[in-house]
Image 1 (cartoon, one colour):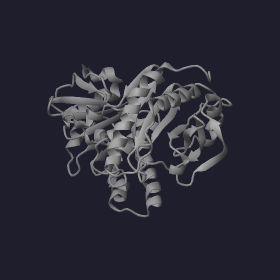
Image 2: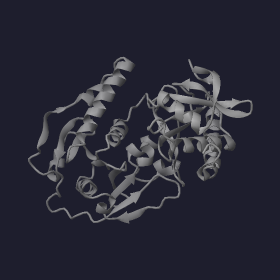
Image 3: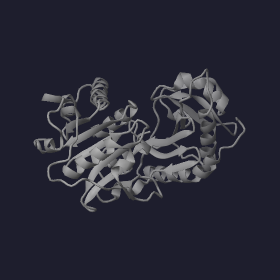
Image 4: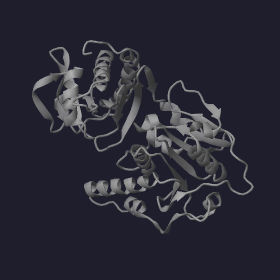
Length: 375
């Protein structure tokens, strides 16, 4: 397996290398200090090694690793191996248990004309090529926009023989929800540190609990959303719970604030695992959970939605929302159809994630499939 070749690496390498070359060159023209751009051969070699590593088992466990391409000189306070480790599946699988926690990267660089692992780092420069092994046969290539930021931007996802390149132009399409723009991250006007997108964090946490769930985001200061909810609501919150709102309005010591923010996000996202929908305002005030969605009086039944995915080459399709995953998707689409200032986030147990929003341009509900951005 250490000598076999993964065909997906050869197909992906030129496109991925081109992406990093463009963004790194643009950042350097603006005077930013960036990671080095990986060559096509380097990208292919790292993808190949990571793919075969993902199919191995180490003492019965699946390896989950993150590889970052940079010299040790660019990593503040690196953990350096006395002898570099070969970039080979057998070695990477044995290292995996030590580096599987979030935020730890195995540093990869050339030595003696060969790629090797020189150690680990928690901090990397902007536009550093990062490859994460997320599950057997599934790899995610990403980077982030600044050292102060914990927000990684997905560039490509490989699943077996399928290559999904994230479409950078998706955020410029008409009716693109702000949530999708933040997830894409290519042209976000503010850094993650300056403007934390709560919905992105909630979406990631909803997907992580793997139970499926629905989150409805409604305008604050109005109760019109109740017209689309079956009464009484079993788990209605009064007064509304505003921990997330307070955290967003009052920043404390950064580390303590991040910890409190993470706990609050997980707390709200955990409620979406309860049967029914969780409801928050656009100011992140928790109003209810376990709510049953019903069609508003005199409102027509939603029969179709437009479905898109921010992947290069994908084509918009029209389908009945029940075809997307059943009752949860159908009720979310109906809610957005009836409450057009609302947004619905739906996580499936299998990892799929959909953002439903009303499209004024198309005069219909638009379903944005975004799981590739949340990996």
